[in-house]
Image (cartoon, helix red, strand yellow):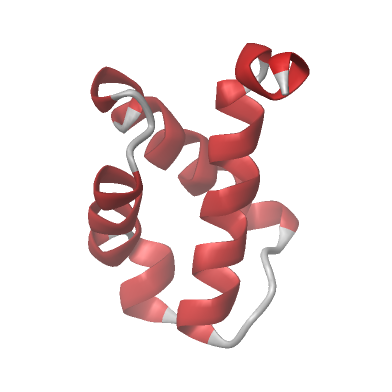
Length: 66
């Protein structure tokens, strides 16, 4: 459990990728990694909260254009 707590950003990044995949029905491509990093960076202030991550994903170009 302690190892998971040390890697909050990695968990947020992977969770964001899963949310995008589920929401768009398409996998994450190499070109999408910049958007994923932006989403994770923007949600850092909220402690990578699920609500914050979802909000960022829905407003991202990956979600609106896929």
